[in-house]
Length: 132
Image (cartoon, rainbow, N blue to C red):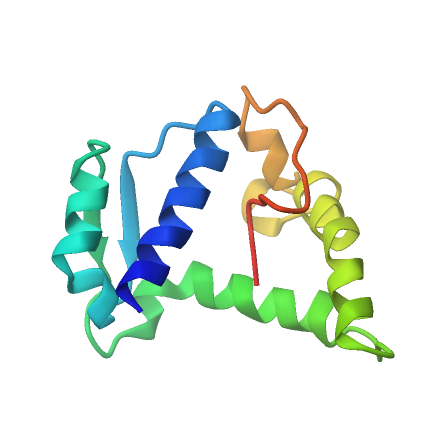
């Protein structure tokens, strides 16, 4: 589990760096993988601070919870897929629409990409802003 969290972080950080996005802080829940020395050292080695959500307060992480719900409602279960492979194949297009075209209330009707001024607009299906 600990190596998985660090492995994910390594890939996510590489994506953000490639996109010209500087990560200063990472907010996680209180899972054991985020309390591990390996996780702490990985962030500290990149000069990134780690913040944790308050225990037993899912509201603290409300944006992530809402994002997960949107992911399920608008992509994973939005329509019947014939197979898991078909569902996975639909993800890159949904992700592009979500990040570049879908209006977000919290952003005054603008898509998330409008908030990242130095974004190249290019990404592959292997690295994404939001992932299942």
